[in-house]
Image 1: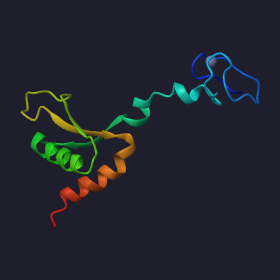
Image 2 (image 1 turned 180 degrees about the horizontal axis):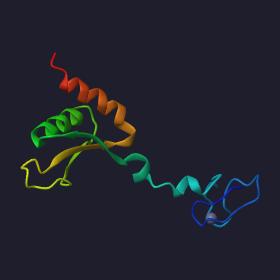
Image 3 (image 1 turned 135 degrees about the vertical axis):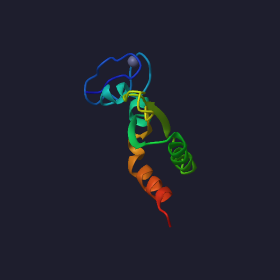
Length: 110
Ligand SMILES: [Zn+2]
């Protein structure tokens, strides 16, 4: 059923614009309820690296390919061993495969 994206009034099928707002109706309010940040910038854990230097190398390589990766330090491990942290690189969910290609290329000894 057509819905006004501005005042959220519902109309009978066949109407194309809101009589109050004069804006084009949309098919479904869920179209505008989608959080653009969620759809576009949803980050997921990508790879875990033992050293920050290494992780930042990967992030830099990803940035060169237009992938906005970020580094998070995960301190789940105790600090007694000296290997207290692991470094996790996060990438946007939508660019995970692309990131894998870049990361693998970066690690390739050839
Ligand atoms: Zn309206």
